[in-house]
Length: 391
Image 1 (cartoon, rainbow, N blue to C red):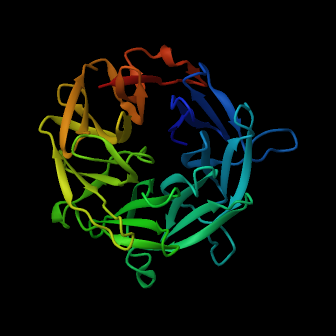
Image 2: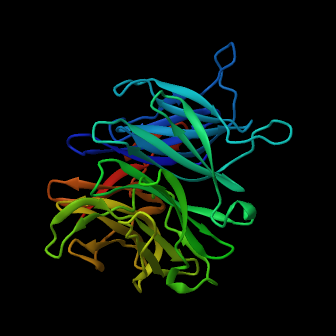
């Protein structure tokens, strides 16, 4: 089971707490910035002697009302949700939510993760998780106000008659909010590697329905191979509307989606969606190029004094870490700041969240920053550290 990292924020201070999840055998363990050593989340089912026996695969995670929700699939194909018993509890509960469909023999099939987010129906309403998976078609798992889980068939981008032909990769999920309503709306982004087209799946609050929107190919070139920018993009694509002087002029947030050319990490393409009418998607693909990038580590969103901005985190050819961020008052101008990281094991470092800190804004990363023991010991493996880079 590969590791997974998620960040949750305090509801008042917005102080971020990063979590590191990893499976050891049939048990899920976790570590966070307040916990030096790994602690067990446990497992969904045990033998009469108390032993875990299901083989688990991590699908993904999202934050729901400032708590981590983890989605896993067992070796029989059933999907499980792990969440804290209460907000301050050290124990976790498991929920069997089944699977979106079964084969001719009634068996669940293994799923591919596309992304997850959580949304509120109003200012005082609880958050509800929205994870998305695929197996030929796209499926959404959601929980109603009575705490009952449901699977919904979202079809596929090109229409139900052509399902199964797409080769989808999730580019992340996010939420947005409109000036005219306090409710949030979920968005999923995916790229079809057969055509290089990027698609969005979004909730139309006006007509109470889901839509697939064709966002075209990055840079208008449909023959190239593009990749998403890391796996931790679940909350990395929103930005508050701001005016020419850098002041917030409303609650509207515009989703961003990022891809990188597979054979050239210097060429990052991004699209900012403008959809105030809610009946169509409007946006233009643009490029954020930098000549000295060695590889892209990921993209995160960062809270600043007047909104939320996206930040590209990359490793440069001289082994330094680079944070590239959009200017608050210019959605097309990128700035950058570099940091020495010659002793970092960057193959294990992924930016997991933007954060607001007293002296500015920054990015939390996890990895090995020159010393293995700082992060604690986890089974037979040293835990990664959490480190903040500010700008």
